[in-house]
Amino acid sequence: MITGCDSVGVLDQAIAAALAFKPLSPAEVQRLLERTTQAASAGKFERFESGDNFDSTAKHPHWLEDAKI
Image 1 (cartoon, rainbow, N blue to C red):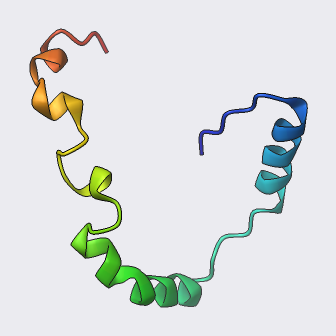
Image 2 (cartoon, rainbow, N blue to C red; image 1 turned 120 degrees about the vertical axis):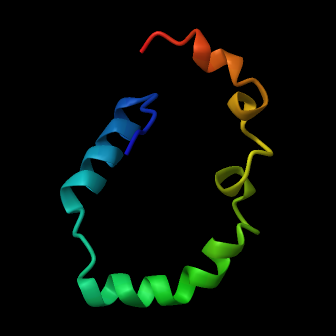
């Protein structure tokens, strides 16, 4: 998780969230997936993640040719 910390209070909040994190059980994951599969597969709510509409790199593939990684 990347989080912007623009103050000590926000940093403290992020650290508290990380320390309190408890992963979902396999049964909880399964229930969550069952409840969200239809919305996730349609791409209706998060078009920026499911298509090229908001991907400038897709519109400018030459940018990747010059990338130094």
